[in-house]
Length: 447
Image 1 (cartoon, one colour):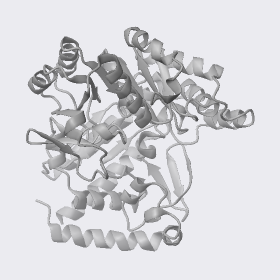
Image 2 (spheres, one colour):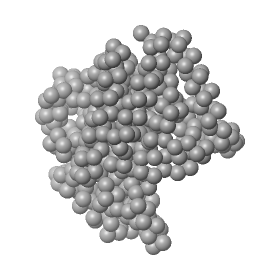
Image 3 (cartoon, helix red, strand yellow):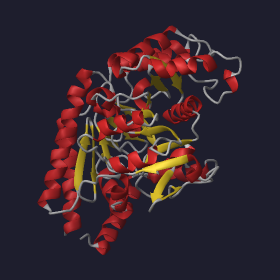
Image 4 (cartoon, helix red, strand yellow):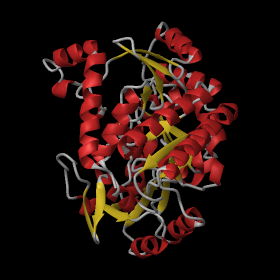
């Protein structure tokens, strides 16, 4: 059991230390309140540990330096957006060169061909389109799935995450589909648009899809935004068999699970999706996402894609597939996220997992740490089998303390969960520093 009084005292001490060492960030945060809603340019930035966000000055490789000159080992990497490592020279050069030749024209560039061919090689799907973000890509894919099948609903996993797609902010409350806690202004009742399924529950999947109203199942191969919840042995195969049996398109969202390897879990585990979405790091930090599909799906979309009204069909966007983003993606995929990069990053994540596990076992805590490729995360319960079990173990006070303790000692973790992501730019010393800091925090809690 965690002594809550001790936890609160330690957190207050860390808050004082944070304020004392970040005067410039504090001043900028105060000034930001005058012109930025909630004092940040994007709402999630309010979730960082500390009474105000740290303002960044620069980031390179696996290091980040804030405006107060404090340097961090960055285990967040922009919550996967910088999984390649920060400021890749090849991407910086490609962006500079392309910016001088025209950033966006709403015309294709030859980089679009190279990137689509590379994605086809990595993921095994032959036809591709681009989007600004994985959220957009997921929206487009859901629209395509409803068009192809003529069915009104989609299905997702309980406590899933697929960006800010309205239909996916749905959870289970008993047998009822309800909006996910915290959702602002849902446009319609999610129970009318979405079926929700417990991860790793083959029987529930069979029963729900047999009703015949689901166009597609949108899922991650492993849950990643509620801790890491891995599939049971045989679960992925069962999902594919059941979706095919009931004529439901299988959409795999690899935006986070790209950590499993150059072709994500799809290539690593031999998955066979009908459509696939990937985003965040594929352009080295420049906004870009992509979605691929089988020849069968592409054939059914070709007629509307060539139709006169495709510009008002609810897919695409003026800045989508711009020349700058595709030049960045070509540079990023040519020089990062390759087999040789994962050969460095994955063992570091494994070392992180071993270090955290040793601390947990030493103190007899009922916590766990899971790894998926070059991504690892600890959670405050035994290994969960589904999102609901993981959600039940959330502990905002404990998590906030551990994050702030780490930040105050030069280690940056991902806000709103306990994820550490590794790139080829990290070192064993970086991993060991986190293990040391994490061990100190747990010892302080234990008294």
